[in-house]
Image (cartoon, rainbow, N blue to C red; front, side, top):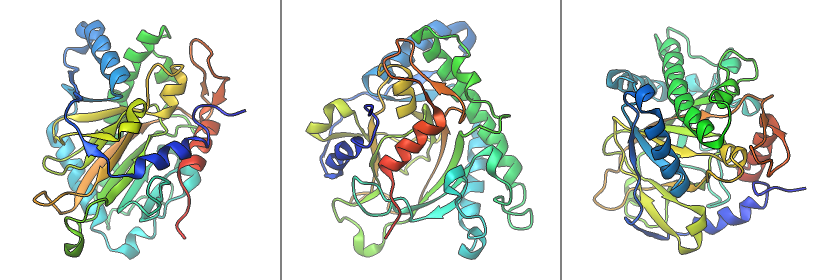
Length: 330
């Protein structure tokens, strides 16, 4: 038996590989989380409206101090500045989604590797995957602290969705337990390579091809002036109209993932997004971003309140999604 998120998704994604055209008609809403406890009902409605209409929104008043975000970006740049041989000591362990990889993710939408390297941090699986203190002093403690702060923001947002879906308020929080050996949420540090001189202005090139995320909720931290992220709701994919999301060092950009779409009985849509190469006159240098993927613990059971789909463990669900969306290079 297949579901709406099985291998058939690949054929839909292949249709997203074209250039398409840009539109400014969609509103990427900024939602203020400040005074959260007193404004919970208001915030919940704002989050729900933004999530159901576009699947993307940005957060202000999220509670992570700007200096902590800036320091984490500094640590990210320091990690990727390490020699290739040093980073190579901490290779990606795919089954655990932990470690460093470069030019290895090939999406069906474009058929070539994403032009980036990344380092995944998944708490229970980091043994022997941390750079040493001699290589990068303070990196481990800073990264784990930042990961926890991102978890707190994600759980706040997911608790609002739980309220709206008629679930227990801590339903999703209980399924994302940082102390569990089955925890599989991940902090991903990302480094997109500068565009080579000879390829600048060449149309149809992507830093990351069109895709949906597999998780419940993605929190993306970006830098002012380092753009390229675009979104196209799946229900509008035939028109191939893409909306650029303006990067901000102070806002967190969020999107719904496939796991939450299923968990909400399709009420919360997971939509396509990509990272395009910069156009002529735009910043052509390196692009850094940090993503936190809130994905339920491996043993968590996913089933929506209306029971639209049969129950499935988060581990089995993610295995299915990875098989549908990635293939090794070569």
